[in-house]
Image (cartoon, rainbow, N blue to C red; front, side, top):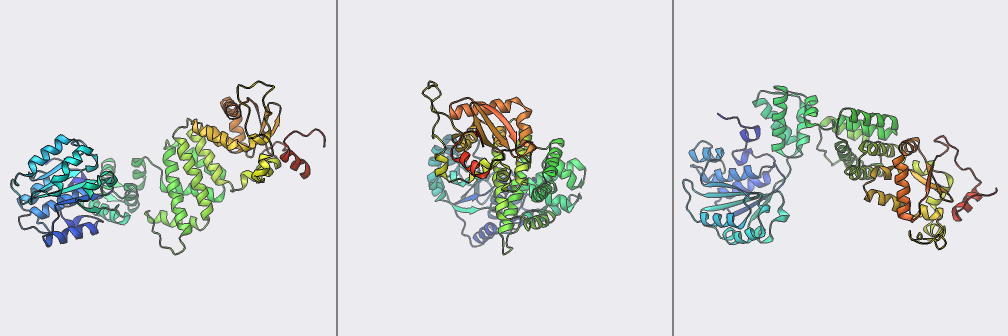
Length: 516
């Protein structure tokens, strides 16, 4: 007998065996019992949630020799053929590869023929949204008034792409993602039948990775069994998935909550050394912080997380230590990093910068900036406009006609410069310059002040960052400038230290101090 994969071997044979879709199976069972079968059904939902299995169970219920019955015997010739996929009168069509008008015309011609050896002909059209517009239109009349011995079951993962005229002719059933506990129970039962030793935590990890899809869960279990020869452990699942262990993701969150930058960077180094995908790490951190946000705002304790029990307990403890504002800020940083990673040639740097930004206090950047930068950030928009002209001279203007570029203009449009860098797929440089503040402009020399040693070192480590900054400034302000980098007093270099009245004057009227 040929080998069958687990998801085929344990495919449900009746409504009672369908997992997690009681709102669908109960309705169909009652319809079969009352002889109120519709001529067309539309099954919508994510992959691996039982759409095709339910369609086959309906075909079996209609054609069982003891039926029609909501509980087919599974032993008669009709049931065995349908289960094996060899029944002549249960026709499965893949609309992704049979999507044209010619295929639908052939279907229309065959629909009128009587059933060969069954009570009803059941057409199961998978991925029906892939049909062309012409094919849909050709199908309309047949779908609305098929022969009495024909039932259509249309299945799709994208119901919004199905024509409204088709939707109106079908009874629609929406399949839900299967719950974590339901998948865990199914995996345990199948592992027991296959005589496989499976650790509870490994089962929980498989269920979580399946993301609500029974087929995905069984495929992963089968892969784990083949890899381990019958001993499924959490370590094996982590290796197979090629992803990031949930405990490691929680370790990152602990570092961020403790504001432990060094420990966070050590974890990044560990992930890189193990060859893990940094985009997957960011995706897992986004999922983790989403759960933290939900828990931090859940005052009534009604939110249930689709996570293993151990991970859920740790999340609950972490949620007590962070505010919704902190988790929202972390999610913003992570989402921005995820976008920039798609185009960056320096993924590790972007992840390190994100770890530093999340680990620091929300006001740390402003607190570490020199006094002029702090006052400029706190100033009203009207004060910023008074600092200088609002637009630079055109790049082709003669030197005598150009308006002078002033520090206030650079400060006001610094965010535009960062946005241009991201648009040009220079996310790494944008992330570095986000932690810098324009502090002084003397002639053609612009001084950028960094509040943290890490960003200062990264800027000076490679000349391409300095050249890229100069090009970006020339593109935005229409004038090339020489870049000079400086640390704040905390970073090791002496920051400007003027009396407050001088600082206020320098902020309101950009220039340089001649005599104090």
